[in-house]
Amino acid sequence: MSGFGATSTADEVLAGHDLSGTTVFVTGGASGLGQETARAMAARGAHVVLAARDQGKLDAAAEVIRADVAGAQVDTIVVDFASLASVRACGDEAVSRFAKIDLLINNAGVMACPLSQTKDGFEMQLGTNHLGHFLLTNYLLPLVENGVGRRIVNLSSLAHHRSQVDFDDPHFRNRPYDKWVSYGQSKTANILFSVALQERLAGRGFDVFAVHPGGIMTNLGRHLTDEDRAAMMAMMKDRPNFAWKTIPQGAATTCWAATAGELQGKGGVYCEDCHIAVIDDASMSSGVRSWAYDREAAERLWAMSEDMAGEPFRP
Image 1 (tube, helix red, strand yellow):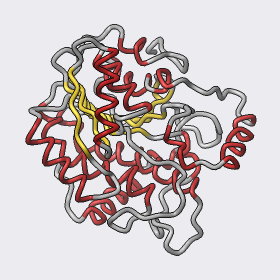
Image 2: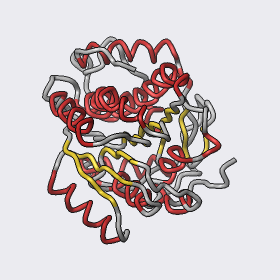
Image 3: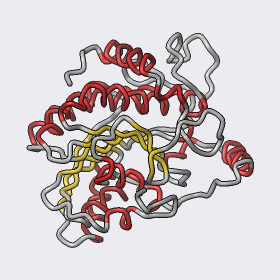
Image 4: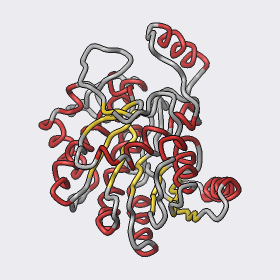
């Protein structure tokens, strides 16, 4: 056991680590959990690269980190996960600018947005949360291979309990759109991607983890209506063990999965509250659904993702 739990913070998890000389690439790094993850790692000496779609917000986040951490090494790079062209451009730029990535934190995401499509015509939540990161990871993999850590952390969510991946209609073209089912599908996809990527990379010293950060109030909830928030609060009352987390607490499991020595060689799993979750198909408040570990589904998603991206993954 790690000794850390639901109330641990990112700083507490990283307290025993010296990340000097380490490069950490964080998507969604301009705010919320991504910014806090980057700040905590910069405080331990890491060179952090913040990736997001708005350069102005990236600059502001970088300044906040530099103000908090004396001598912090912070770079920024623009990427819009709702555009495969933007993802490719970011990947190419990263390869030209950076020599390596020791820790890749795929943190960016969108939650419960109205029905909309990415620039390439895919349902927004699956396209942004899963496919964009699938493609960017493909482009960044040579840099991660050059690194020492060789860890990839994909932000998932307890919301994966809501839905498996609907391979017959992943983009809601023929079924009624439900924003929470869509979000759940994308979060299951994050875990299945972690499982499939680990299968391909384990023999080369990589560890890939999926992470549930916990329930945190961040701008991820920017699409929620007052009705949505009321429904969420009512739902939480049915979960006796649920407690909201602060942003530093929410970033802790990400930091733990990215650095904990006890996780070496244990990739391909889903983590919550700074531990590896148990498979549980009944609990409403914790655990990983067995469907998210289904290797046949993971391979099916991989093939579908390559088709959507229009190019093979090159692990």
